[in-house]
Length: 181
Image 1: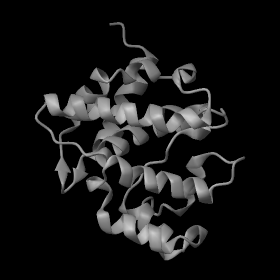
Image 2 (image 1 turned 30 degrees about the vertical axis):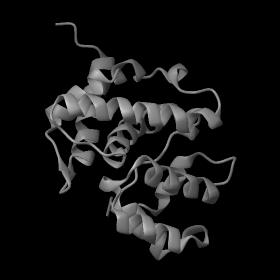
Image 3 (image 1 turned 60 degrees about the vertical axis):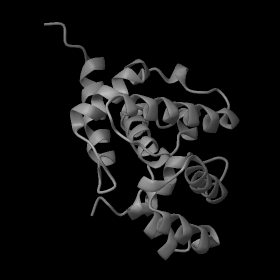
């Protein structure tokens, strides 16, 4: 048996991200479908391979949009209708596990990664009026993360960038995520 740590990490990250993204009542899918989508999107290559991430912060949003489009395409091949919100949740959870929680949290490029967006985070940002953007958080929460278009999703990320200071990684916004309780 040739079972490597890379495969082990991929399986766990793919399982966890599929569970997190596949439970929306608006887009349910099975774990094995999420794993297939991630595998066919080339995400196994990213395990512990920070070099594949964009060098510049300004390139992350374009990279992320292309990755979401690839995930949406792969989901379509399985008969699934992913929005950018669902694709982003799957991708962001995967990267969170592989890079942020996988020991690369201080890497500059990892700091550019988008945090997972869901109702719990958006509601907390709204309730706490984070960055004085209560109206914006409320607008995004009403749309529902699983219905996000590319523009809806990018608006949330842009607002997070307004709140998180330049010297901090974007994942620090998850201080407001209360889903662990």
